Length: 533
Image (tube, rainbow, N blue to C red; front, top):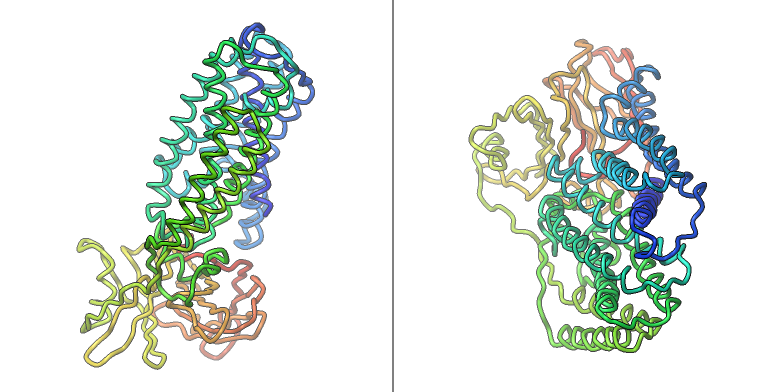
């Protein structure tokens, strides 16, 4: 929740800074009078590096506590080698420049470029950049710049402007700017979705997809308010400025809610492969309201029914009436109410139309474990099977991919060979596993093929231990009990199910063949996704 709050405040800061300096860059006869103290804008600017420092603290704590790296070395590593630290470092210099340039109004255009630099720095360490590399960075930067320009000006005028007479001159340039920003916003949004959420409808099964869909629905009335202001810019007579400020405030509130939803999404697992994410995450509670059966591996499609058509028809009617109330009658409260009601009808109509079925199971019988696990990868990928463990009809397999990733995959033992389960893989990535003395992770599984349906949680701990070489087995100390797993070809796996949500802390003892304790491996975190570093 802390990360969500930090990102929400960051979006607000970027918008306020961009809006303030853009308006100050415009001649006074083309904008309203802005009553915002220099001290306040300096405070907003100073908040940016403070907010960007929060993920830096979390990373330093992770290196220091979980990996026992000395504190000064942890600080230096995060600040100079991690994107979050680099963004924080750059933001300090940019913020100092903004604070010194703020009192001088003629430097406002220069300050705009400094704010652009802050946005680029934040995008460098963003969720999208981490997931999709350069595509994510470019998409996130364009997205954040566009929304900061559009909503920033809007918010400053809505909450810090007084009545002004030059409506026409302001709307003339702001309408063009807003239209351009919206085009960039939509384009960059599609770019990010293609990289992060390629399975849009199926993503509704996850909290990330649900929030994204609600965010898109709220974007519709935001666009209509923007269209309303564009039309005002084309009219000779606009009307009382107090009414326009009220309209701006409502539009800005829609934008702030969207900011909040976007911030919450940064703490959700991006659904690049929905079926894989569902191996460890539960179906969203919102989606569960509309589902009639419990799911294992899921496929989602929209099936239009008579009820769906009725609900969507009502939604269109309400949305049309709201648009008329806004654009023709200037009835802002009525328009807002009907916009929100129409969104509820659209949401219920589409969620109620989803048809969910289990993913197809590969019925092919493979003659060997190697042949079965190789099906996921290309012909040029090298697979090295290190360990297999039989539990009734299930087979837990640990293997390396190109001597880099360590993967645990579940197969089914059948007559004549093995069956594969769809997306039944847990992956330890990041630094090549052969380059580290020990690499161990625990996955807290809530659903999917690794999940034991009779219990709430399944805990899968596996890893590779290359040094010390005399280790024969490990003893894992969960909150609910201790479990021993044998080491085979330097790897081990332990799977246990329970109805208890155990604490993240679970130290792992390295034991010699005679049971003597060699050392203890500290683990203070459990993974919630299907892939981790």
